Image (cartoon, rainbow, N blue to C red; front, side, top):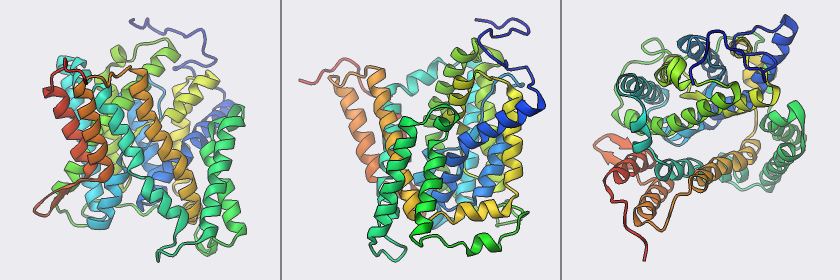
Length: 426
């Protein structure tokens, strides 16, 4: 369906190209900011990166995405959970320089795929990444983080078990579940943020929060940007590149899914105009920008798609406003210090739910796409991906190490392409 010039969606309260009043603009943009805030800052907290930089890179990345897609798609770019496992491993070995190169490689993969799509179309993506590959990969992303969540929820940095940690983690988990199930309206869009705030207050009452860094932080403070050459010397990390780059194909399918939902919401076809190659290029450039300032890879956010669906406000100006607010907030030193003061039990409690939801989303893909496990090939592909990925059967060649997640992704794609389709489980 080709979009007529200046087509207006009759279902939208404010359509894509329409600008709200200043008062509406302010409130609607803050709503999008709060919707993505919890997830976007949680990723750097789990990895050990600066939350302020993650906010900054998400804002700048969103502006770049809107520019590349010529202001035709209302989408927000936030920190991606899909890369947490290899990023945590890289922080222990290469530090951020390795993560930066891996993030740059992720953006490069998006740009290469965008170029191929522009030249030959997108049918090949579905052949290389069918549900039998994507579903188990998404499950691996969630389940491989289960141990990290449990550790944060039970033991301190010295490895000593504390029942108070577990109590705070479970309270945080249960409150977040309650918020997600029973809140309505705008509050239903921010259960993660509310869960973190509630858990933080409980942790503070039990003496688990150190407020000293928050009190000492300046109101205005530059984020601790990690800029190549200026912040660290250039050194090539093959292992980092190969660990993160293959996972780009998983987030790519997520990105395509979000665009499909936006097509339905806005009564348009963004695969044709501005074209899938533009949307992929915008996503890739957003990750490349993040790699040059110290942020994690970014991807389009389902939380913000949910806001669009509930409010029927599709204005791209509202998303621009949210991006600008994110950039401004990244320079508030006390905010970054407050985020970094969130104790591990709160993060662990939230992670129980978030990582489980990610894993369940992979299962949902398999169910909704009616993947037939009576076919031997499907059983073999899923089995190999799950055990190699969750077990982190990494490949080490010399000084280069490729995470189990990367190995599982590549193996899944290869097996899908070479195994026959007609064998049945006896």
